[in-house]
Length: 448
Image 1 (tube, rainbow, N blue to C red):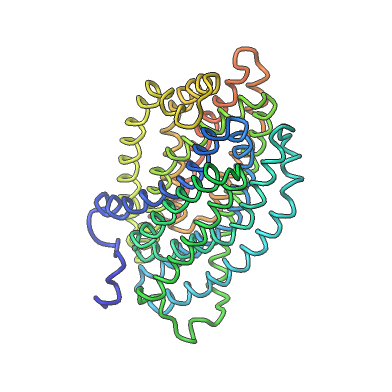
Image 2: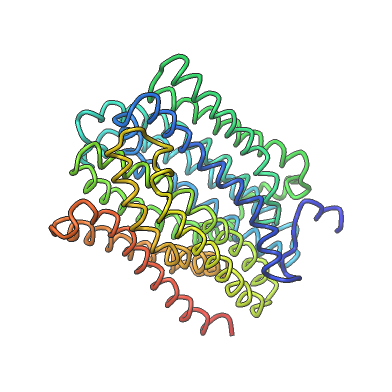
């Protein structure tokens, strides 16, 4: 048993805070590097091609997120089931989960990728993408659609390894591929002058390297990936459980993506400068999301293992530890965005009007970071213990908020264009409140 668990972490024993930090740090570094894919695209395109090119990349973000979310939720669902079986010590079922989740991810990524390719142009038109950036936006989006299968490949491998407590292996390959992406970005965009197309191509190549290398290494080194013929048999129970958890997660993120697309339409109505500023602040906030997201994913694994081991008291302790860590990070980030927002925004663009707008926007949204953190912490706990209903409910709340609040606020002279970013913060508030109320309800039923 000792040998088979050499690349895993048993989170059913020990101090919850220490376990969460030890598990989360490699994953946080990995998540930040993963975000650098888009950041590098944005920085190089924005500074070497111009703010209009940056806007064309940013205008595709919500659509890309929609298709990636539909695909990757299944991997999250399979990872939660794997973590629960790992917590019970059922090694045969863990291996079956690894095989059956692969079937699901492979099928869904192909279907989603083809659908995304066909729907790219209609969706950009539906969003009211400004005519001056539409050609480049369409070009960038179509290349990203091809990369969906590679993103799915990496996220499948990473979710299985993390379910077993191994958050380091995915990190190593992600760092390498991120550096590769940066080199290719500079080569294609600055050297060969391929523009937006070159940035998208560099990202897809790097994603392919990341996904394939991570999977090959796992197959060769992690004992749980050494599958016998019996593990490759389709298991309807595992597939159903993965779908029961994964589909609501996918739909949750899809609903969030749809609501973000609605917000993008509002942003597009204010012109290219607002689109560029919104793109820059969105990229910055993607980095801010990473510690929260990592903490939530760590809590999913932690709670999945402990819930599978029937240690409900440790699940509750995990939530408390996660909340403390979340609050510390939120308090650290607030003064950074309040006093240094111009320097942060200036990383992406040189145009003074875009920097001014982005700086004010960051000052608005940073007051709401704590509510963003609540969403991720509670979501991690509820996903870990198998609450599939919450994912849908939280997605619906975000859709309602983003379909109503931005249109209302931007129509008021008091807010105008700033209503875009106020609506982001207010949406986080309502989503965080809903998440916490759901936890209180679920805790009374399940974690007695």
